[in-house]
Image (cartoon, rainbow, N blue to C red; front, side, top):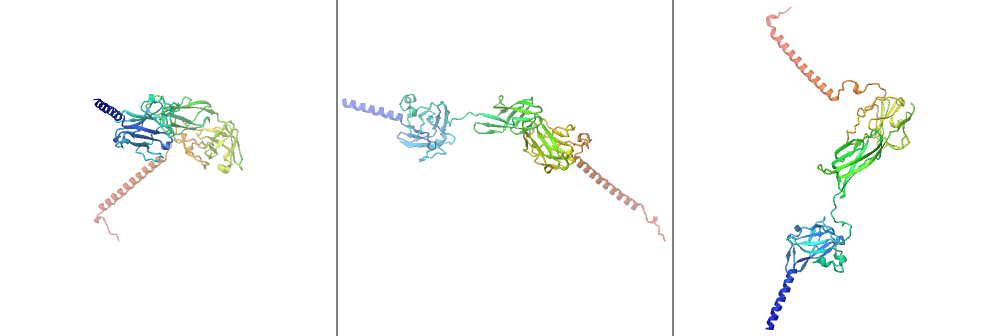
Length: 453
């Protein structure tokens, strides 16, 4: 009787422990190594006596902030098999330098760091195993009960990192910044270049969007592209310039704002002296405390002109002397000299007090996105029409007061009409001549003719 009881007891114990083993049998995370980066891997282990198909399984990582991110998608474990009592290695699809071959990989844009918790999900989206990543020099401890494991002595290697530093693998919140590119000091009445640069913390540059400029003088500008343009302040002073960038046309608040202060100083450029008939040089002086960009300024002497090369800077309280060998001016030219800036505005005249007429074609509202360079050292025997340079000698009235302005296309149309008219006239004359000859031939008869001896 006692032997029979013992047999029942043994059968019960065997069934009990067998059931425990069955319950605990399955796939678990055995290791999760984070350092070095080239040897970063995750190792699964199938502790059951039968192979396990990983279709529908997935792996995620949880950061120290508690957020979960995909690491190994279920598509990468499709039809993957772990043999009974065997290991399964997962690595990055690029950059892995370990000696073992991976059974599956995660995308190169995904990874994990020390202190991240690696979570293994079954097809029912249940966490069946978790593990805290550590370096290869430490002992990895599987986590079946996180709270219980945190009380162990090796908590330094098995608990999530409590550092306030953000992991380098954490997805960054997109941040857009914009910057105004312009000189801090400009001269009144002289156009200068505005530009901008809009970037993100991921290194991307934005060139389209909504760019709202406020120039601080009551004027503003809206553009949809980040292109350079020219602007001009008419009066000296300090102006607070701002640029607001909107990534979307539906945005109410700007995604980025940039501000800067631009100081506008008066123009103090003078023709300090000129040469004589044997050496007709022209000397230009800057009496201000700021350097002035003379790029593409026009010096007109008599009926000739000279374009100052791009990049020419006149330093504060300094002079620049233009040689006739460079300008091509002759003795008679320097009797009347005018200097105009790149905006065709008169800056200096010689002799002082000479009255000149001009037309300023620049408009703050007319912002150009293409800054055209006129070239350097241009010479000519007459003033170019497109430069709108004044006639210093007032020999001929301006184009605006000279009557009808006939363009080249008008001349072409007039010529065409004349040619057509001549063609029609010639045709009519030929036809009339033919009709006259026929008429004469029909009217004359034989009896009307007399032979004269």
